[in-house]
Amino acid sequence: MLIDDIMRLGSGAGETVYFAKSLYGYPLMLLRKGKPNGGGVLVVGAVHAREHITAKLLSLLMAEYSGDYPIDVVPALNPDGVILSTEGIEAFSLKKSERLKLLRINDGSGDFSLWKANLRGVDINVNFDAGWGTGDGNLRRPAPANYIGAYPGSEPETMAAVSLMNSGRYALVVAYHSKGEEVYWGFGEYAEYRKEAEAVARALGYKLKRTPHSAGGLKDYWIARHNLPGLTVEVGEECFPHPYPESRLTELGKKHSGIFEIYAEIAKKVWKDKLSGT
Image (tube, rainbow, N blue to C red; front, side):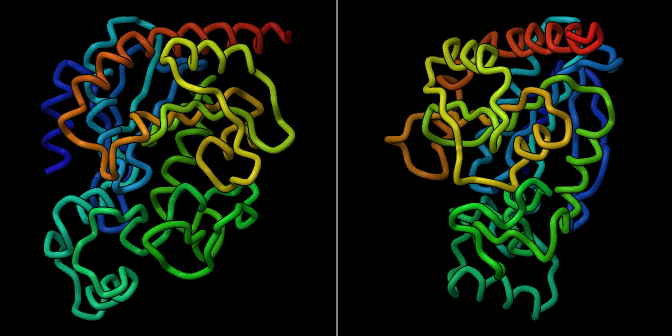
């Protein structure tokens, strides 16, 4: 089970907080280190179901982090989707009509390994109230990917992330996805904190990019609502398939080793500048 893997990999990763529930009722877990007194870092993984490698990577990185600056990690924002992707539809006690609906959304296939959405067929990363419905490829019906939902924030997973981002605890928010070895920054016309984004991309050896045709994402919401730095980090080499191979986890961990310390330094400076009004 995903939660068991996260707890094993994240052993020593600080305090565990269950802060909300998924659509199906699974607990949304947060790993916390440092005192959450404002200006911290929030890192979120497994927003997309098939990208569950990010949940395990973030658990490893949180266990490694030895700093005292506050960092909160949500290894898997979309546990329902991850379980569907990794264990299949039989992992859920669903009504026959619900099971048939999911199979219909998935083109009749019982193989959900490439599924990105939650258990309602909503892609959480286009469900946020930040240019909602204006992204290229957005869909208006349930699908394995890209369905924007009935309205912005329609999904409990989305609103759980919104609640965290609006808590006043953070100066930097980073969403982890796979794959492509890229760091996305900014949103719309907002292009502040390029230097900070460059520092992250340089440390990882990733390309720094904008996403002008994308909207409704977690990073987008954070930037649009708080005018503070937000990043999307696409981990892993493009040459590998989805889902990203579990065999590459150790290598990903080595590549990202120390990145939380860089996030902490960025957040510390951003928060200091904000409090001083500069």
